[in-house]
Image (cartoon, rainbow over all chains, first blue to last red; front, side, top):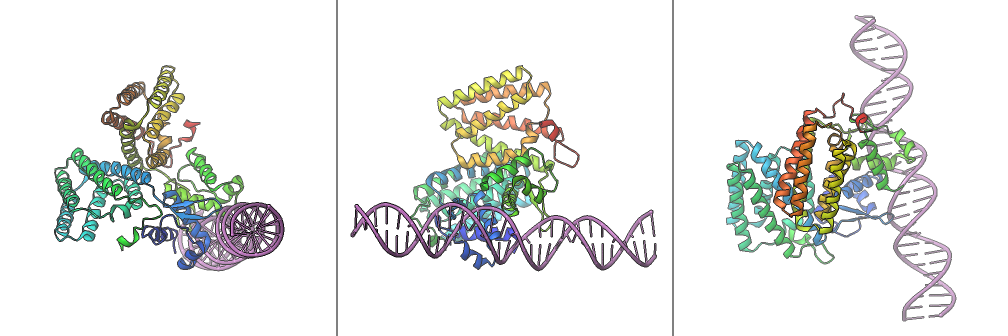
Length: 221
Length: 221
DNA sequence: TTTTGCATTTTTGAATGCAAAATTTGCGAT
DNA sequence: ATCGCAAATTTTGCATTCAAAAATGCAAAA
């Protein structure tokens, strides 16, 4: 197994909440499960620690990182900034074909909304945001976005929405698509920020910081 | 020696250009120099690879990452976005005392400009930008900023400036301080972007992408 | 019964060793 | 002399091993 794959597999285990935030990462078990020895595992853990997914305590092992409310706020703030930037750049660089793809994804997502299928709605939602970032044509930006969103994904896509909130989100997405089609960078940037700010408020209100009690795992499955 | 220290020391070696971009990283030599064995060294290299400072080629060792013009553009773009965000947040959160410190740093920097001391000017410049990011009160943002700026530092702080460019940069810094004192987030954000855009143009015009020929090392020393 | 001190066990962090892959070297053929 | 191919050397990646640090358990004393 390649180094990057090891990192990826452990990342998946952490993001799935299979090892819940704050829990110790059982080195030996993971070694057996991934069928590797401790050396490559530990290399991967160090990388994930640099990413912020793992917390290394010298001489006391590693734990799955736990997000406080403050962490969550900070991550959302950065995410807002990155998406806003991506929106602006995307408007400068996106092709008509890419816009059409996003428009199609948007239509599909709206249909999921009408069908009241939250899971599928979230899936489409995420695809649209990622497509916009991708259209920005900046791999550095895309990389940071991936890493930041990974850390808030569970909170972002697990928080239950009220009908009102959901309707608002869909309306915001109409505006997002519209700005994109008009290639209105400033406008898109502005909407994306507001959109994420609302999302953040939802998440924080729901008290989804990853403290001892909260278990997001159940809700995602 | 602690893991983080190992990472830090190798990072410094790379950023100083001691191992020039594109050059192979001599594992054995570094081990001897840092007086560690290959295991912790390789762990550090993997972390630095995730940061983008090192390029790992499976079964072919690691090299110091080389930045193309495109990489440089992408990094500057992201840096702009991060600083713009930091500027906005800083205006919301900065204390009067912090503003005073930045004002003092600004005055000192302007004096270095008058003294025609580019090295000291750059040093002060960097301190101001970092202080603004720090005032944003967002460690996630600060971390990304550190990592992104590290990768373009040499280009950013090595490019020789024309008198005209330098004068413009100082003027922009006046505006930056002013916006900060007025706590004008939108304004600060705007100025910071323009400021960095100009810097990027300088750097790219100077053709400072890290291709075979270019050696930035001499100029920094 | 609770707490403190010590010995044992477990786990971490790093060095070494080994097999596989790649690079380099050397030799022969054209 | 140059090109191609094969052997030798080097280097990489990982498993294993070893030493040190922390956690645990137990017994004795308060």
